Amino acid sequence: MIGDTKYKNPHQGERSYFLQPGDAYQTFAYSKRYNCPRVILVYPQDEKPVRMFLAHEPSSKPWLYVYAVDLQRDLFAGQ
Image (cartoon, rainbow, N blue to C red; front, side, top):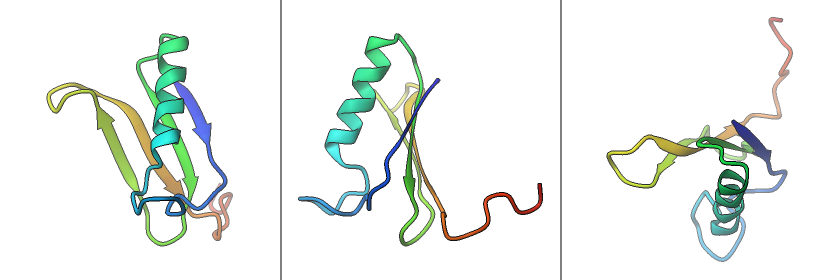
């Protein structure tokens, strides 16, 4: 599995989509280059939690998992 992080507001850009097309293309290139069937893309959370999964076809398994992490809370609390 490949993980990629972005430290930017995912809602900025030319469209109002959460996932920027360039970020999806980049992770797709990683997937193909390293022959990896799953990629995780992590953004900082700005408004509400996000969990998104993208698949090549509706009946296929997801290849891209997108999450937003709340950086305003203590990530090490409870450990």
